[in-house]
Amino acid sequence: MCFSAEASFTAAAILLPAGGFAIRKAYQVDSNLVPLAALPLLFGVQQLFEGLVWTGSNLSSDKMVERYSVAYMFFSWLAWPIWVPLSTYFLEPCRRRHVYLLFAILGGIIGAMQYFPYFAHDGWLLTKFLPNAISYEGTVLFDYIMQREYTYAIYLFVIIVPLLTSSNRRAQVFGILISLVAVTTYLFFQFAYISVFCFGGAVMSLYIIYFIYREPERS
Image (cartoon, rainbow, N blue to C red; front, side, top):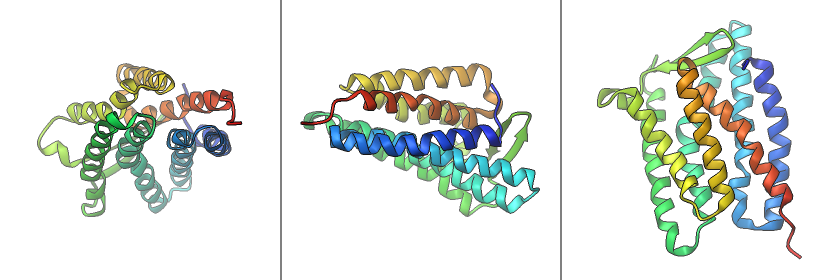
């Protein structure tokens, strides 16, 4: 598996228009699917930012690397733990929705505590370029109370459990795919966990485009 500016830009070039199509089709099929359908497009934006991080390195521009690393981490820390539970929230019957809203609130709290300190503490986000990978390192707020592995475990819990417990079968399948990405990344790519996990999630989001494409439009 190879990662580079070309890989990130290629993923963005596929996901952005395909994600736009998925949103449009979801609106025609079932408006409750729109938040889930938006995930591929959002993944495409994140991959675009990572391509710009790579470009900043190639241009030896520390400011460019820093700017787009912060933009990339917005999705990693803040967007995904909020948006994914909200996506399942709209798929659930009213009697179950409050559970997924609580997941989104928890994700927002965790994400904000991890992301916003980057603006107050220089050096808390360190971007390291490895052979065919980027490692986003540094300090996160939870490092002062627990090991980083537990922080990642809570983060994954907030993202994956809403999908796996959804009453929507396709959301469950997507949750299984994301779980496989998480396990594979943990076993083989711990040196660049965030980057590889998000890239894998972006690839798996093609499943969302696939099943929405197959949905019949409302008559």
